[in-house]
Length: 412
Image (cartoon, rainbow, N blue to C red):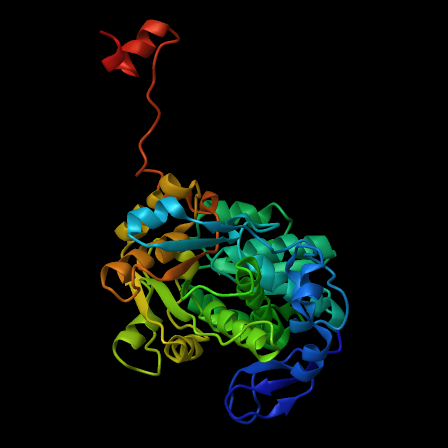
């Protein structure tokens, strides 16, 4: 995989050799992986990609590894669903779901970025991996570090959902709960990264880690028959996913795998943690930090690292940004479950709820094609809905009690 060229500053354009380094020494801008697109164009085709195993590594030319992946070899190529029942409720002609709630191995899109990050960390020679996480990343780092035989230290806000805590500890990770918000956890991890030779997947390995998100967009394009929907609705926490989906689609366009990309990218956040949406609605190109307060803990980042670039993506694509309340999140989770049989975590409730709102406002026309990103599994955030779905009807083990309580109208 010799298509990887350099690391390049997204602000001043200065170039750096490929190493575990993420910030420009001159302007402090973030570094990003740059590729030899002419070389990729000569070596890749739709037919070649389609001939490969159905996982995210079928797009290996667009990923920053020197060799084959060390972990996560079966990650990706998750279900692409035409959501006809949900479309009818929302009043849409054509609606699709990209369902990373069943991604391997930990049921979220984070398996994509972590498989790249840990594989790259192994190439760099690291023995310990780490991260700051709101939950899904913790699960994925713990699982894939275990697969790779690496030690892992994972830092989370101490009040995360119990499902995500359990789904990290089971892999033998050293889990540290920090009494503070995610932003405070991340600042602590930045200090630790300066003093310990650990691979922090979302700090010093971030330029490589974030590239894995592109495969979410790559799969949409391929699974739609090498075309795109007119709208994609993406959840935003740190802002990396929405930015990298757009980067990936433009890369496909650049090498001829897609025709002109005209898809509008819409960003979705919870009202209790909406710094990117707030900036968009106020016409700002900078992010005002917030103190998150929402049930959508996986999106609860008040000072998003890629917020500026998320705004840039939304505006460049001609998209929009919207937020929904905790009540709307829960109702959207229930709506998705009863129409399409998908139990999403709160982040999926955000994207479904925002799609509903954008359609009602006329931002997304009802006669245009829409894709909703579902990025995590509802089994991880059961607390959000456990008091909102009722309980079982209890009966005696008698047919007469069944007829009396369950089917009383049939009991004439």
